[in-house]
Image (tube, rainbow, N blue to C red):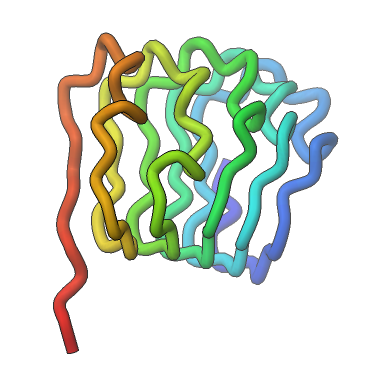
Length: 129
């Protein structure tokens, strides 16, 4: 499902009801600031999600609950300053994580310890102006 460039500002908990077979979700280039708990609860088959180029500052710890098959997550070009606000804990099967071009002040490896299957981590700092 491609929802790029739709000026979306939030993802409600019931936004993706009745889509249990959805495999890939594109939400890039919107204006999403926060993703609340349960936002992707109805997407157990979700394999990848692209959230790049939003205004994300935090993702609730329960946002990715029941997305056990998620392998790809792109959070690049957002406004995260703290890895603990990325809601990564439930994503134990994640293989690729892109957190490039955020405003991370501190890289906290504790936020990644549970990602046993992670094979690719993309981290690039924004250029200083």
